Image (cartoon, rainbow, N blue to C red):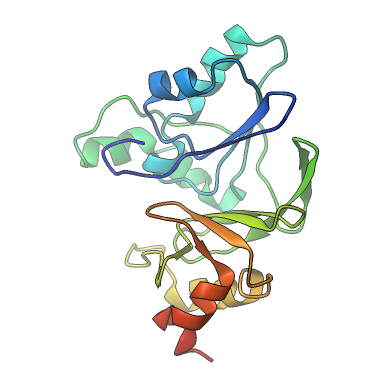
Length: 208
């Protein structure tokens, strides 16, 4: 989604209930993909515009379609300053159609969300942003990791609030502890697995 080519993830079950993770924009396209689905929640991994810039509009438009309100959940409250400045972020890149968002609830590391009949664990991994979180579905052996871990690389930390050592430490503690077969859905680019990154990611192999 968006000119930054960020991955927005839609999960749904046999009841046609869905969860949307990181709707950065292109809300018309998202709504077309969600046709026939009932959205239980919108989840945010962090506060950058390409991951959160469409969340407020999507929530508002879904609330007009569905009988039950659709909450925006996450990220950690330490990204509140980014969520409140999405218009400024967008102006910096010359982009339009992205707006700031106030979540219905910030999330905390260690809590478990019950969505689509699954227990989804929240884990805080700062470094790319201070309040970045990831979502781990142990039952499905799947992790939605935003901009923390990518195929053979890691997220950017060259922001004023970035912290490369914290990011690597968080990845090793909260992601590399998962089984090798865990599928990693990244914020950009193609999926990978924990086992593949354990074997080949130079940022992690060099830190053994």
